[in-house]
Image (cartoon, rainbow, N blue to C red; front, top):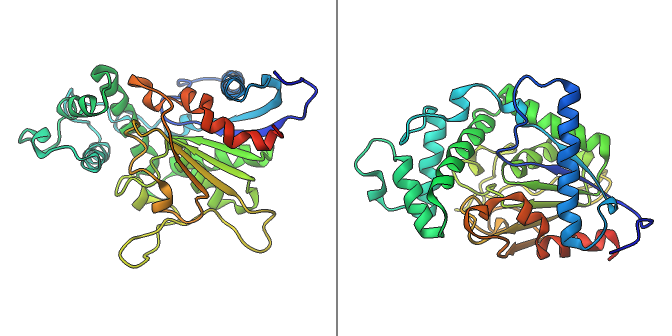
Amino acid sequence: MTSTSAPTLRIVAVHGIGNSFGAGLSRSRTEELRAQKAALWARHLSNGLGVTPDRIDLDFAYYADKLATGPAAQGVGSDDVLDDPLAQMMLEEWARELGAPDEAAQGHAAMPLRALSSWVARRFDLAEGPLRVFLRMWCGEVAAYLRAHDAPQRLAAREEVAERLARHRPRIVIAHSLGSVVAYEALHAHPELRPELFLTLGSPLALPRVVFDRLVPAPRADGQTPRGAGLPQGAGLPRRTRWVNIADPGDPVAVPPLLSRFFDGVDLDHTTVVSGLFRFHHATNYLQSATTAATIAPYLGI
């Protein structure tokens, strides 16, 4: 372990799905829970790096409360079909990207969640029950954020992340899952807040029709293949942001793999095993992985 007198590293963490603190909380209680999450993420990072947690000065950008818009946005429906049509469409498009066979639809107008989760569980060797719960949550929260370019929920979530960046002035932004989408848009909306490193973990940024085609800024036409914009760079901005992406090959959310095939400005695109079973997409495993540690270590001087 390193000395506690060593310099600290400022980081802002942007969470993915499943991080709601609950409804009706006071501001003080929300801040208390935010601090607990920040300490937890700092501990996971320090474990992977082999340093003491006080080397990591981490702020937690909490935006989940901005997406709490009711049952339709959450995509809660019957066992087989999500109530929210957009969430259901996203589920089906995601399944097609994974290569789910047509028979998974079993002749229904909408692809059944039960049949789909069973197929994905077999393909990725995952526990089917927890996977089904996860898919409901993932599609609901992604739909809530990406429903419209100018939706109040989307703007509020993006501005919450930008506010944390402006307050903490981090050298590194670490964004997991849906958080990589929110952080990507926040950095484009506020190029003056540019960090030295943008680290995306388990990112669905390139998922066509569900995420990629709904981004702000929109992907540009580049011959036959649209390209997503890299992070804001150029004259007058304080520094160039380095973009590193890490995805577990067994993480069905981080599809299609290799963001550099779809976005400009991705400096490193790692595909590395960080976990197994249902924890395939869990932030804890990404944060503690050797690849994450190797990416962050130079910024700590180790």
